[in-house]
Image 1 (spheres, one colour):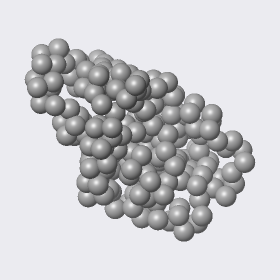
Image 2: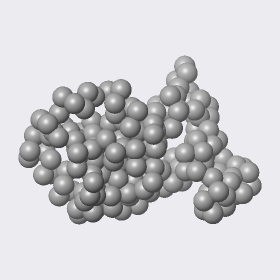
Image 3: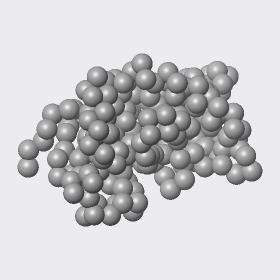
Image 4: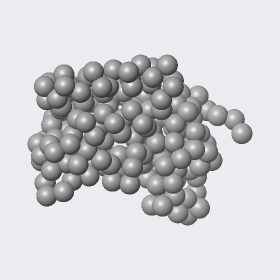
Length: 197
């Protein structure tokens, strides 16, 4: 059996799904209150002076702190139902090809479990992603085991799967944050172009 590791945002989807989910799920009053603090950080991120992992961690902290987990995950289910409209044609085709081969398919993403769990369940694929931490039914705004990007993607894959037990490892990504994930593969694709060794 083969294993196929897919980044989600920008690889499977046409868009970044994290930011629209923040606007979809975080109350407007909270966004308004936090915006003056976030604006300089967003500008640093856009100028590539702050990493995506750092900005996502801060936004999640401000957006989800003390929110009811059940409420956010219901919103996640509703949001997940919209995502099939933004799936790239090449991703849809490749996911179907791996399913026909009988391969194990794993989405490996820095995006959130609140909407990736229902999407992956619908498509019958496994998931490694950023998990929102909760205590007594309330979200803390933190991630369980931190953000799931860059080296952490590869680390979590190796923690869960013994890659040497698979006949072939495929990996798909679209940014520098996926480079360690792609390095795990026998056959890697960057922005849907096959990488050469």
